[in-house]
Amino acid sequence: MTRTVFANGSIFDGTGAPIGEGDVLVVDGAIADVGSGLDGDEHIDLAGRAVLPGLFDCHVHVQFRDIDMWRLVQQPFSYQFYEAADNLRATLAAGITTVRDGGGADLGTKQALEDGLIAGPRLLISL
Image (cartoon, rainbow, N blue to C red; front, top):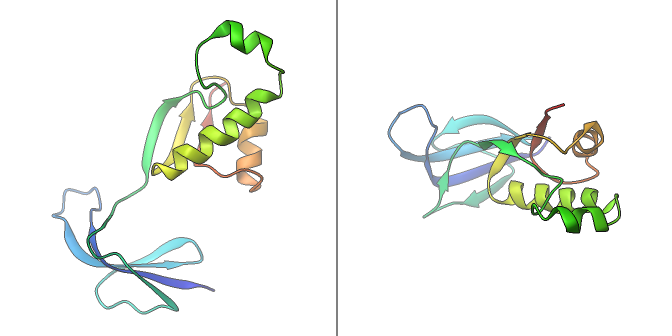
């Protein structure tokens, strides 16, 4: 069990409460507590930075990088899955923790994320 404290950050919780200074305790990848003076195995100083909830993007097409249909029909079918992996990684790096794909991503992409084969946000697929 790993206990990491992200300390001294400005905390925005999305509830309408004022932004306040505090610590966030993360245990095994999940937020366990928010407050002041929290204890953990590792401390990361967030002075001058903000902590906010994960963001949702409710309309993405992770399998595609552009809408050039001529390019899409000329590239190998499997290439779109490599583009999807890159798009998902970049989306997560931007702070988006959940996406709803409006068409393109399939169960295989979702399963690859869940199994840790590729990095990215939680994926909700539309069929």
